[in-house]
Length: 246
Image 1 (cartoon, rainbow, N blue to C red):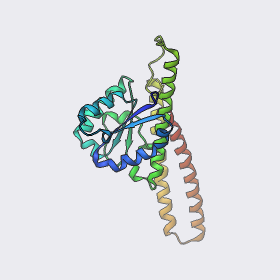
Image 2 (tube, rainbow, N blue to C red):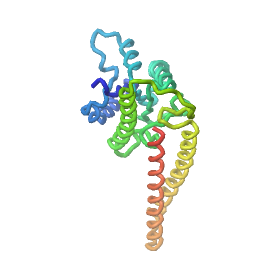
Image 3 (spheres, helix red, strand yellow):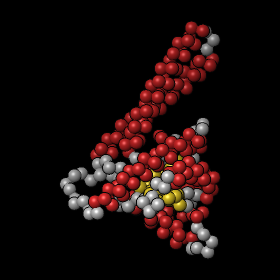
Image 4 (spheres, helix red, strand yellow):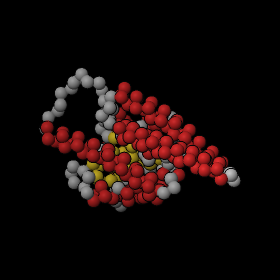
């Protein structure tokens, strides 16, 4: 398992149950030997916990920030772990992935510029089926793991450092800054369209619920179906962009 991608959980202990759920959904990758997951509950008795955390944070290939109000309120999570994680991300030593566990105001946080999971950064606890949310997170993490694993294999096979070229600097996902900005702008535009469709769908459903005329209800039903179809199309486009940004 020496080539396994090392995954570090940064989280508030108040969110330990949700961390355990996420770890469970990553079990297949652990069984396959493609990842080694670590969190502070792995620290053995008698060990210096701060040193153990620092050591594993420095070794991690992927750092998961389990975002909630508890996480943002924790001085250790925010000022120590998150700060160092972002430093390693900026130098491309590691990949930082924010996982939005609960609704909270994380706009303006240093990790706010990164692509978050689950899709559309919808908090895990707001999904109707949390298993579906964690599945989406696990699939997103797997894509990053596969990307890092390929890089490790390529680096090992070459045995040499690739000379620098004059190509535009790429982000951690293999995109240039210009490409990433374009995709982010497209994503934001699609998200606005998706939100408008959601509002429209809500109004149509409310109207359908109180309407008594059969003919009108039939028309509303058709409009609801059309809106859902358009919403699904936008959702698919958002998912494709998110995969590119990871």
